[in-house]
Every structure is written in structure tokens, then in C-alpha cells.
Image (cartoon, rainbow, N blue to C red):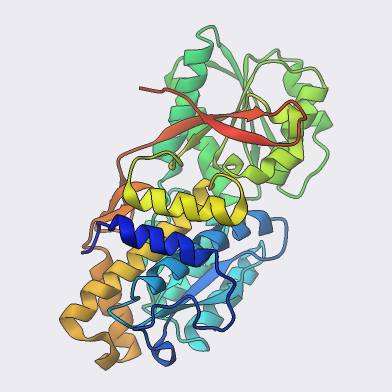
Length: 401
């Protein structure tokens, strides 16, 4: 598979991404035939309280579409993205998947946004033998849903413990830990189990476990109960809006210790929720904008040029999911001439092909286990650092070696 990127190609791509599209084909290589475009389904949340996370996934796949079409698509055939809104619940994801599979006739799907949605929607794709790659699904058990289910988002069981170790490195005196989690979300329930297990394995005292809903806005009661137990560390498994508001209210009520945020905190949108009070929150990540690879350099520069900020983890993972599809289709086309395959044949052979490869992505080198789980080598921990005005912030990466 083609993993290396010539510097000239990268430069041309960055130039092209800044152009204003005047027609549907402006972002495509002149050698591609737009009437023969290969449809890939994108099932992300465009509405609901999950829309901010869905937008980050959308940003990543759009950058990938521009880049790979500019560099020739699938051996001259372009790809096109077909979007369906999953909203923030299971019903929305199910409807999006059914539409993409039966009406839009996509060759594969990237999504859905939440693990909670994946447990409901992915079985539909598996029954229809349509490959699915999760770009933001990290709960345990996702790849095991079926033979046509894979993900580029590393399991929370792998990533979450890094943040606890980073917190102990900053404050070795941590003894008492309070845990909060969103009980109505499958990912957060899975993540908190890992956090709680790690707390106990490290010999720390779990003083309380507080539950909330991702739709909650008032956390005064849970926060007060936890603060009264004098924790040295608070761990929150929630999404950006609810998690950010919980951080804000903990600080306003006087909690001064370290805070760890789960994977739902891996978005720059959290800065606008807890603002100055975000400062110091620790978050483990599966992506670093400064990872030294040519593909990451291309992705990062394109993202900054378009959005004027560093790319977040979900955008990088969504780009990587698109890259997996593109390179697997390129490889398959050289073997089978995909335009001669029926749609069911293409979906089945694409699923088999994508699991075989190694991919040099913005996340680093990734591959897949036989069950479709991602194999990734590099992980990171960042600490939120807010500017003096309390409005803008960044993820400052910590040394965890």
C-alpha cells in the first residue's frame, strides 16, 4: 500500500485546500471521473448535544476527501462522502445507517459518533455485510459486534490508565479519589469501569462514585457530596458540555485538586464550556498534533489553515478512517478492478482487504486485529492550559515516558 507522501504532493494539497470550490469537481484531480465516484457513508451527529463531537469527525473526513481526491482517488476514480445525521441517540444512528446502506448504496460507513449508538447501529451494517469503521467509538466490545465492524479509535481500556499515571507523577501524594460518570452513555459507563479498576489497582482509595446524565446542567448536589469527602483527585467520564459544566461547578464550589477528564474531553469545544476553570484538567489521548510523520504534517497543516486551531483527536481519527478505506480500495482495485464488482461483492472484499493492511496515518502506524480492533503504538497525555483571558486554550502535552 502507498504509505509515503512526496513533499511536492503535500505542498500541492495544502495549496488546493485553500481554494474556494466553484463546482462539485473542483477538489478532484483532473484525472478522476466525477460521474464514477465511489460513495462512502458518514454517520456523524449533526444535531443534538453530541453535534460538537460530530462536527469534529466531519472536519476530519472532509479534509481527507479533498486530499485523496486531489492525489488521484482510487486509481483515478474519486470518492464522495454521503452524510447522514445520527443525532445523539440510538434511533438516529439506526436511521442513518439504514439510509446509507439501502438508499445511498455506500460501499462502507464511518461512524457513528457515540459508542452507545454503535451498539445499536453496527449490527445493522453487519447483517447487511457493509463494513463500518468507528472513528470515535472506544467502549469495550465494539469490534466484537460483528465481522464487518472495525475501529481506528483505541479502546478506553488502553488509553485511560495513562492519565492516572500522569496525575500521580504530578502529585505523588494522591490518596483519595472521587469518580463521576454519565450513566446514560455506554462509552462513559465502560470508561468509568476502567478508571475505577485502575484506581484500585494503584492502591488508591475510591471515596465516592457519583452518577449523572449527559443532558444534565446542574451538578451542585453531586459536586458538594464529593467535595465533602476531601478527594485529592477527581475523575470525570462525560461529554464536552456536561463534563465541562461539572468541572466548572466543582471549581466554583472550592475544589482545588487535580481533575482527570475522560475521552469525551478530547475536544477544543470544552474550552468554551468551563473557560478559565478548564485550566489544569488532564486528558489521555490517542493523537498528538506534533507526531513526526509526513501524513500528520499534511493533515495538521491543512486543518490549521482551514480552522485556525490545532486539530483534535476525533478529527485525526476520522481522517485515519477515511485513509484506511482509500488505501484498502486502492489495493483492492489493483487486484479486482472494483468497477466490475457488484456492490455486495465490493463491500465484502473491501472489508477483507482493509483488515490486512498497515497504514501510516496521522495517529502513527496502525493495523487491525482479526476482530477489527485497532493496533496503535503511540499514546499521549495532555493538560488543558487556558490563556489569561480565560477564553482560548490548548492541549499541552506532558512527558509520560
